[in-house]
Amino acid sequence: MAASTSIFAEKVSISFSYNSIKGGRGSQSAEWVEDIVIPQFEKDMKDKGLDVEVKALPSGVAPEDWKMQFVLDVKGGIGPDVAWIDLFWVPEFAEAKLILPLNKYVEAWSIWDEFYDPAKKAGSHKDDVYAIMYGSDVRMIYYNKELFKKAGIAIPWQPYSWDGLLTTARIIKEKLPGVIPLQINAGTDMGEATTMQGLYMVLLGAGGRLYDWGTNKWIIDSPMLRDTVDFYKKVYIDEKLGDAEMQVTAKSRDKTFEAFQQEKMAMLVEGTWFYSSVIAPNGSVPIPDRDERIGWAAMPGKGTLGTPTFACISGGTGFAVSPNTKNADLAFELIKTALRPDVLVKLFNIKPFSPIYQEFVELPEVKANKFIADTSKALMPYTTIRPAKPEYPEISYQAQLLTEQIVMGVSPEKALENYGQGVISIVGAENVEKLK
Image (tube, rainbow, N blue to C red; front, side, top):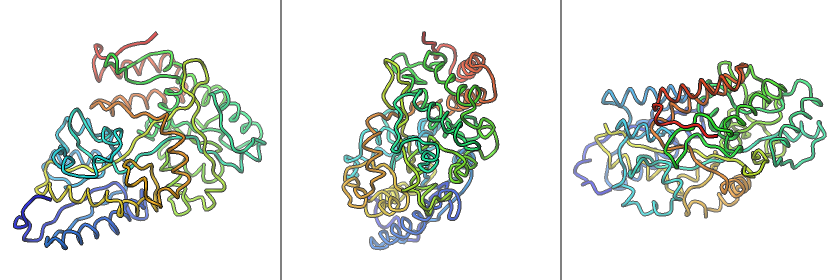
């Protein structure tokens, strides 16, 4: 920190906002912030002769509700000094000047050079860094080994095509009445979890994307999008291999987690966080013998010529600084403390994630985590990220509506037509395309 000590001669207070709360949503994250990061930072500052207090601002609401409050606060001239945000909000927030560019800070931060390029890009917009990722994730199919054994399905299990995946789902449906064979997220209630764990995992497997980087246009129709909606239709409408009603009810994601925990669901497409946090023995929806009972498999591509072997998409969250802060230097010092290996590893120990900088990868605790090591090695080569465009959150909502309409019985043709109209209303007809 380059600022002179005299500026901070009196007690200084900064605030840290995050959408997690002890005993509730993201409890491990809140525990780490309040019990590890803040005390460590305050001690570090005291050792430098600075009297700094960090005010914790936990929350435990739906992500979109937290986002809305953050936006309103910052636009109103208030809000936290540091915020833990979803990185897919970065372009939108940067364009609206809701977060501060951090270039001058990262350029003077020695550890920044060790960050992997995708991690740097995840918190950037255009040529500026706006947020610092703490860790990433990958997505896969989780399956219940005990249910598979009851259905006569060999373990370990790995499908190499959609047909292989659906064949397994059909066996579950036949052999285990009352068990939901497969969950591919759909609908608007799950928000971005529908886009990433649902539509994108299918669309990528078909060889498709939502955005064409060659033409800089949003794709509103393509053979790959049609394959995607047909897959949803087959799972939820034609063969009833998934529970359509669960997708469109309130708290659908919570209900999904509970169904998987209670062995009422055999397969669920989810991210690293689900295994390392939600169903951890000390998680919010715990499975005490998780390591023995739950297996994972890569999400297969469609299995036809030109489609990928496996599909995966990665996201992440990270730390940003509000433009309203009066103590930007201190705010970034807090971020640096949180991301220091000896501090960050204490979050990894209770809520493992895919590491994103080299020094952290080399820690013994990280190397010892077989699940993280295996999934990162297997899936990172296949992963991609969402389009870093300011309009992406609105496009994502249209993608969620697309899946919602399919599971509610709207025809693929009509649902895609509605999707196209929705995207055009956001970006204009000149910024969309249809692929033949």
